[in-house]
Image (tube, rainbow, N blue to C red; front, side):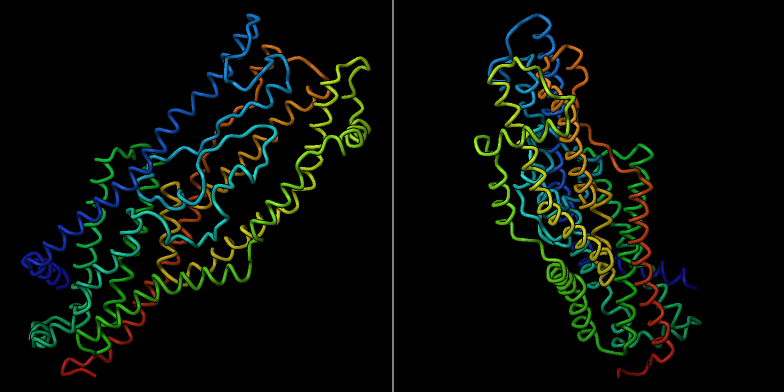
Length: 479
C-alpha cells in the first residue's frame, strides 16, 4: 500500500506545472553555485600549475649555475650561490592544492590563504596574516556555492512542498476518503514523505553530479568515490531531517498557513539564529587576542643586531660550541651570524604569544565540534567542507606543514651559516622542499561519520515525535 501511495504521489507532483518551474529555477541555482565553486577551484588549480614547478626549476638552475661557476640568475634574490646565508634568503612557494571535489564547496578557502611564500627567516603567523584569525563556525560568510544551495535553499524547497502534506488533504476533504481505501494514516504519511524526500534529494544529487562532472570534477578514484558517497549520504540525511520535520508539523492538526509559518520559523532558527549564537558563544568563551598584540610583538621581535648581536652570538656559541667557526673570518660573516642568532632568539620570545592564538583557535574549534550538533545546518556544513577540501581542519594541517617546512629550512641552513660553510651541488639536492601531505581518508571519514550520526539523531527525534503525534491526529478537524 505504501508503494501505491508513493507512485500516486509522484504522479500528482509530476502533473503540477508549478513544480516543473520550481525545478527549472532550482536547476539554474544549482548550476550557478557549481559555477562559482568551480571558478574558485579553477583559479587555485591554475595557481598550483604555475607554482608547483617553479621551486624545482629554481633549485635546478641554481645547482647548474653553481656547478658551472656561473653567477646567480638575475632578479633571483640570491647574490652568492655558494653562500648558505644568501640562499636562505630565497623565498619558496608553498601551496595547498585544490582537491578533485573542490567545486562542491568554497568553504573557508576565502578566509584562509591556500598559497604563500616561506623561507628560513619567515615568521609562520605573518605568512597567514592576510586573513584575520576567524571563528571556525563562520561558515555562513563566503561565496554562493553548491554548499550554500544545500544548506540554505534545499530545506526551503522541501518545506515549500511539504508544509501542506496532510493539511491540504484535510482542507480539501480528500484525507478521509483516502483513509477509507484500506490505507492507514501512517501509510499515507510515510508514502507521501518518502515520495517527496526521494524525489527532491534525488533531483538535487543528480543535477549536482551532472554539474560537477561537466565542470571537470574527478571522482573515479577510490578516495574520491568514497568522499562522494559520504557527501551523498550527508545530503540525503539532511533532506530526510527537513522532510521528517515537515511531517511532524503537519501532525499538529494546524492549517496549511500555520504550518508554513511554523516551518519558516524553525528554518530561520536552525539555519540562521542558532549558528550565530554558537558563533557568539565561542567568541565569548575563547576570545582570540587582538591582532594588534601580535603585530606589536612581531615588531618588538625584529632583530636588533647592534644592541643584542654580540651578546646573543656568544650565548649561542656557549650552547653550540661545535658550530664556532675559525678565528680568521670576514667581518660580514660575523654580522650575518649575529643577525641569525638574534633572529632565532627573538623568534623564541615571540612564540608564546603566537601560541596563544593557536590555542584559542583550537579551543574554539573543539567547542564548535560539540555545539554544531545543536543545529543540523552546522552538522551538515562542516562535513561538506571537509569532503571538498575546504574545511578548517585541512587549513590547520596546511599551516602545520608550512611551519614544519620552515623548521626544516632552519635545521638545514643554520649549521652551515654558523660554520661559514659553502653550498655544494649535493647540498642543493638535499634542500628541503614543501609537499603537502593529505589527511588519511580514515581520519576525515571519522569526522564525517560523527556529523552523520548527529544528523541521524535529529531525524530520529523528529520521527519519534511524529509517531507520538500520529496517534492523536484528528482527521475530522484542526486543533
